[in-house]
Image (cartoon, rainbow, N blue to C red; front, top):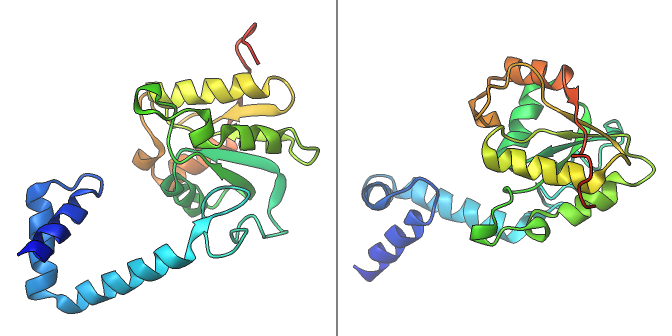
Length: 202
């Protein structure tokens, strides 16, 4: 049963998967739907081998640049900063944003060892200060961690680029995963300016 326990342990490393759910999933794949288990293993192996962070926005891509960053029809002057790839997908689903992105893959959390370097903030800052970028949209959650991360980025960029945040329709203390596409579209199109804290160290 060592192989079974290894599979259960691997499944438990996924977000929100506890020991009971991991065991149930493992037994289902092994006993009731081995074909799905084979498909999952093949797809995961292929994805791990092919997908890497996009050189420009850090979302997953099979090439050096993802499809969005490589698309010359996208607005290269606007960069939307999101916490996760799931947030990027939600914004794309809303269909009202035509710029490019930067994916942090998390938020600042000193206690967990997640600092600016881990989030790629120096890379974002360098891109945002380039001649082609006019606006950076901070589309982060309104929870404490998201707000702290957004303020840190705003302080780093200062007044060198126009900063904005999502507007109406985003309740305080919520992240983008709780918003429907229509609400998210309104929040993007009605975004408001955001300024760094006066006197903050750059």
